[in-house]
Image 1: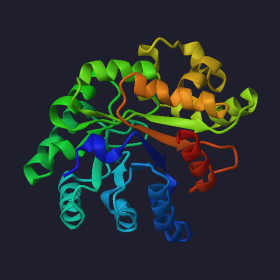
Image 2: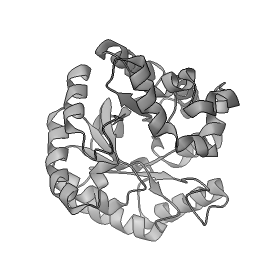
Image 3: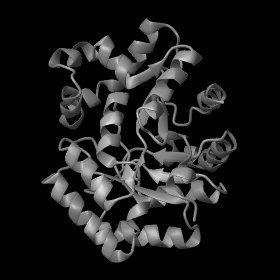
Length: 287
């Protein structure tokens, strides 16, 4: 079986739309997945607490693309069910699915409690059911969850982070585990327009302490969280500008120690579930 680092490649796409429940979008999803594979992306990450079942149509429509959950919330899906679905899918299509797990947020999960201990117990249940640890990654931000990613899983998939976080995560993980941060991309060269698009999308995340606490650890201050986010915060969390600037920002994550960068298109055209034109342009930029 291909090693995880080789299977996902250097670049992937992170998308809410690829797990859409809307029937019209569901018809287009397999075609979009096949095109992403043709464009050279090594993996797709299904956002929005996706379940294993959301990966099936993408895997069936492609031949090599790795499909991952980014992330499956451990509060929303029972470990026994996730394990059973994983094993069934992996039996049918070996090595094509990567189980990304996360603890979500207290504001989004009514049963939220002792996230670290609950995640450890969830991993215990997956292991007991036969899910290989190397096929699991954690949406880890802080040191304790990163250590769990190193010791009990195949690596980490941090969301809304900076190259500085990536460097610290790599130092903690060591050389072996996969490190696959997510990075948001705004394909806009005008600074005011790009930052306005970014702030609109960032608004929800500014209300979630899991993220703001991590940014404080990275050296940002409460002042950076006002007004929709300071220019400093926006520029740290997003890649925007001309092709060279965006490519440099993506490269900064690899230089900091990332094996793979999961790229999420953010635009100001409303919630386009499948921004296929932007995915094509991004592929050209990366080439």
